[in-house]
Length: 148
Length: 184
Picture 1 (cartoon, helix red, strand yellow):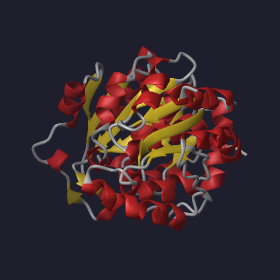
Picture 2 (tube, chains in turn orange, green):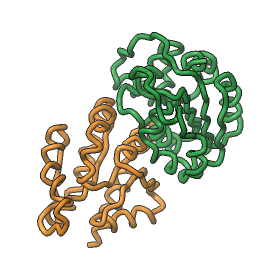
Picture 3 (cartoon, rainbow over the protein chains, first blue to last red):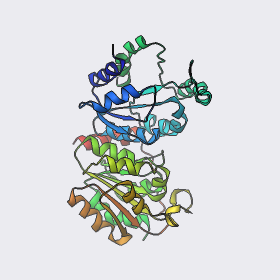
Picture 4 (tube, chains in turn cyan, yellow):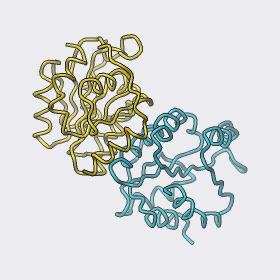
């Protein structure tokens, strides 16, 4: 199974056609896959909160959006999640790489990793942690749940 | 002229258009001057009006006018390259540049000192950038709509706020009626 293609296929199958990304080494394959597909409009963001603003606009324009980002940037998105995405009640799937996990070579990445789940839990954001490649089988259902 | 006087003057132009309006006093002023279901008021999240408007313009064909401020653009400067590199011809970004953070007590912004937002927009790659005096805003905005070309307008005006009530509408109601207006 090509996991990058599987993720992009699941996005398309769930009618997600507007995807913003901030670069990540772990998710580089998915980002490249999304970039070359005609059925997804890919708009890179300079910062994650900017990306969430783009997604909010796309949603109101009638498109299903998604954001792809690193967990290290969760901190800069807290205000946007609380006062835009949640306050106006807009669905937004966030595919977040988990830097700072086991086998992480860069110590500083661990600093935000230890806060990642607590911050998402504090915001009451349903969170699914994929530990193994096979966990991606759940993505299709997670996307359906997000837009329920 | 201050921002609320510009808004009063351009209200007839804005009325039938999709408008994304910046957080704080700008939204309160627009809401009080001419509330329309085609207005999306930001109640929080400083800096993202231009991004929300761009996402909206890229996702549907109707013209989108974003009413932003110099302080909010400075908060989210990365928006300018994103706008420039993802051209939506139905997108107009109107930056009402009063050189100050109006909603927080009129503290000066850097745009009111050495920094030129129109030059920054040009440097970011935006192709149709027009800086104008406050009194010309209506004409420049109408021309931008008629041009059907992505346009960044920097309208230079004086610092100051009109006393308007806060918006008490529920955010989900604002969003829902706006989405219905988008689809209408």
